[in-house]
Length: 531
Image 1 (tube, rainbow, N blue to C red):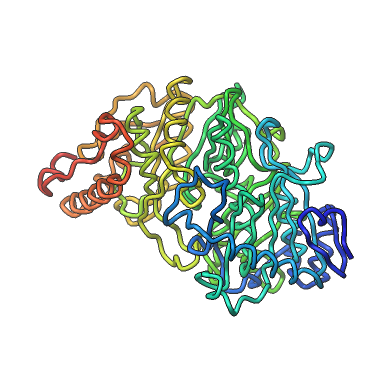
Image 2: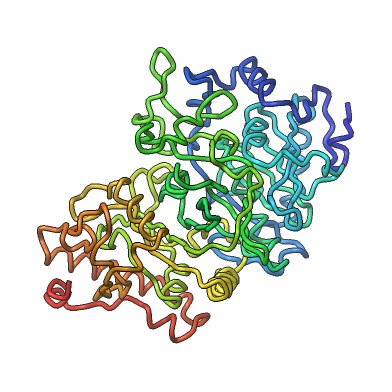
């Protein structure tokens, strides 16, 4: 039969269409269909049900070439896809859904109404509808229109043995079509593809309206001072923004316009590996009925073992922001006083915190250095050093200079402090303590780091504090954590060369002042002595 909610996109089905079921019913449907089971804490556990894709599939993401893609940054991130092949795949997907039960979710991305996008998710899995219900904003039902601003169609189990005939790389694909206002997902169950697909759409649409889109989390103090935390998945955006002493605005995706900042989502998508109640109490307590666990191992009593990464290191939980006690449900905040660039330095040569000048901020924003953590993307099994411009290159549809220029204008206008924070490793070979990272952030936010002396790093030029309350002085300068100083110099120089090589692609688009912030490659003896 044909249903009104699907007519606009041409989908017809002979089976049931479930529209905007509440979370409890979607959990029931998922259990009845054996899509998952309940964990001991009440969360819906989707484990071992993602095929061989336990993370995003960036090599299988394409943008359909149409008249609406003039502003797309074409290249390795946004690979063009022929409209003719899209038409064939879209017809194939609609035919596939003709004999499937379908679950539909209606909601919004963007807490600011002037920048809000109505989203409809059409899925063959009940748990994908629950994922959308948990993650997107569903509190504006009175504003819903018959035809949404963008549609996500998820046909995760559609067979694609002939994928090569369509010019695809594998049986998995994620296609963004700005003309059809549709995202088509196939071959992967991973919920993050739904989330990041809409984030990519917002990254294309909103800058044209004068709104900066950002891959960052955000929180606010009790005296209404906002802070942003930029970083790739696994660098600590969710963990560090979930601060019991501050109110959460959102954990991953935000916009910044003339009124301030606003969340794109109504939920959070947190990594679970090594999750503990002691270090991350807000996230730990948010995992309950109505939340979704992906790829988390449980024991015979279905108690989650967050230390077990045998399925994947990229175990995940999705929960609504209402599960965070001190979250701002309106999803908005004022202009940020502080911005933190989070990097998981796999080499262990960057300080745990450093202050950046405006020019350095632009250099590091365009560089986006971090390490891809295991499991975050298909095929990544151990940390890998990488550069991801704007701390979110896989989702940036426009040229990085667009976002960088908008950020520079806002930082200058609102006198925002910028910090580079290493949430990765140091010379001990161990990851920097989250306790120390939190203490450093607290000191930056409450002004304690404005009272201390800074020394420029002789290689990276960033400004390193000499002291910080509740943090051992010896870890502030990373060379102090290395027993082999000559080895430190060698590794630091190697990373400096990587920075310089990577930035070549942005040099023509930046000022001499920004280019001058490039690291200095030194002779090994001088580098060791200089620190």
